[in-house]
Length: 628
Image (cartoon, rainbow, N blue to C red; front, side, top):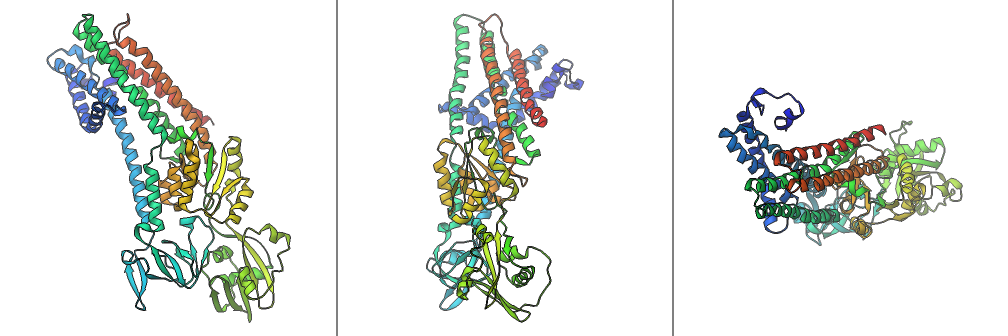
């Protein structure tokens, strides 16, 4: 572009490549470089021609034919220039062929790279399950590979292990972490006849379970299948774009051919007929139309990245404008996904005793109570952890217990705090009681805190007339409490990944749903949504299942995204208007039937000017963005 067009706008060009001073060098140089691009973009040209032959023309057809016509027409003049007719140097249009191929290839490279990342993340998802497991055969524990575990085998899981396959507990009880599968923020108690899922983490108990679903039938494998299925589904917007292309491309060819035939019928010179045919194709070449959308999107993506928003799918800018429902995951999206001590009825010494007891436990609630704080260290004797109940230990010759209300009931103690206001206010939070054999000393309330920006994001979204929904695998009581705090009217709780996907599919009948999530369990639903957003610190699979990733821990970026999207879409519509208006004006002139005529050279310059118009209009996006 620089060598070909630079001298026309006064840019310095080396004398040995100047079209007027060294036309042969100039011609050979452009011919060589453009030939490389023709080889590089041969797949586009081939695909476009085959689609045209098969009567299914698309943008590849217009790009391919436009590139070939420009190239062959230019090659005709290359031969004349080499033969000594250097005055035809202005009839070369190589820059159009090379530039179109370059930008089409660049877009496809980025798309391919994103697909490779998604494939890697799906591979990592499969690898969450351990490669080996322990099975009981003939009374002995044997370590085998996952592939060797069959339905009906008795599998052993010890504290700290990951569950090897889906199954039903036949012996023991424990707490497991299923956050990455169900979104449940609290450890889930598992006992006799409870179902355990492959990949979940066994916190603190020894269990034996009967294998029920292995290999492709496991929960993890089903999630992978759901992600792949949702990924392969084609959005309506892409179908409409293909349909528009199927009409636009043949229309240009038809106009060009009719123009050629009419010139011959009117006994006009053959050179005029060929010039007019090429002029129509050149002037309708998809430079301006091709730049209208992607350039605005590239600039918007650049602006977003500087503000902590990673845009992976440029179509998102258009689709966001149609969003009327926004679905939020709870754990890790609206909340911190980390248990914290938020309140209680206790004395300072009660907390110190509890913290000393909890230092001997790996339970998630223990981490929330200790919370990296400094406290006096006491000697804890005869510490014992009761699976499903709590812990106990002797401090300063006194036996203390810590656990939930079921531990109180087992010790036949009544809850003395149940009628107090602070207890009722924290009814939806997790509770840990500290007590002795004789009385209950204190109660502590723990919760997965709501993110500060969660309170700030909902109200502006409602002002934009967006319907806000919370979709979570967490239990109904906790979910309802969080929703009430955030003024979210609609809550769908206790759902597994497949149910999340079904919910999004049901609501997303008009391509109008945005899904915001962070976990592996959100990935199928993220793929199915019209536009999907993975929040800061989300899992790799959720990030790669999303169109947009927030690189900052700030949900308010979603509101900024709506603002940027609105401006971007307005710029795109303006670009398309100018590109189409240009075609409407230029194609009649290119036919050669009007008093004002365009030869291919003028058509090429006009095409370049239309592209410049689109470029300058697109850069208004950055100017407006920086003024905000």
